[in-house]
Image 1: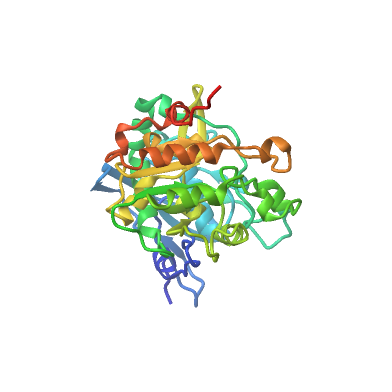
Image 2 (image 1 turned 120 degrees about the vertical axis):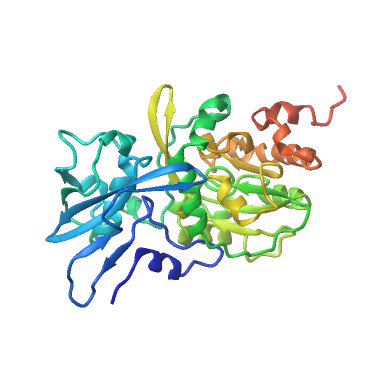
Length: 388
């Protein structure tokens, strides 16, 4: 019997309102004879040039040996060393930090952000992989897959450098990653999108929720929510459909939404659909002139599934500007909500301010004419004047 990664991806079940699993890295086609346990191969052993929306892509076929088996994989020259390691991980279950790659290049392998094209690989290049695959060993709770994946607080504002943002958006690898993520994504609609409404893409962790006390159980869910959460969603719902996009896995995300009363309640707003971290992918940018690796929420993935949505009518609210790397003009950064138990947090009025701004811009025909990075300036002009 022969099985392919593509078959597994297309047949995998999605979680309700979530997405099926996704393995980040170059597209690989794995076949394996499960009965004989014989040679395992991936792809076709030749160089290939393809033309797509990202322009001409050159793919290189490589061979490697691991644990007595031979593998082949195809990788694009526009991919990064990170993608190569991700492909090896998906085929062998050896995580990148345990991988020792021998014979692929002379000397030390470049860092993760290095481009495959710069490795000057020839088609059919052979190398060896040494490393122990992941097992079912007991892990520290912070490493468990169902816990929030919010680990890097370093941020960068791409709206301040639109030229650099355009370069990231037009990068061949990133264009292909958007296409691959779009093709893998299966969206379970909770509430159908309504004609003529704008789309709000809303983050959860530290945007509308203080995750830490909820994760630890230090506070009940209602006390972890940002003040005015439900009032905000009820106020903007007449103008916006709501998508939740979180950098966590579905099993944890569903729990949070139910405990917060955003799903399965009798609120006057409805969530249209939910996306989790499997819809995100890693990009390589710069922060203060230094290479910077982080995940991104590419709105084009949503737009590919819903043609009625575009940059004209979509706004993305998040506490991390880096999530806007491929869509800086559509992003609105809200300051992070933390320490929910403190007096300062309980007096937080950020969602009240955001409500005024979003209701104010709702009639605008084309959101591309707006500067969301100036939203607080606009909001201050909307506040009711007090008589002195």
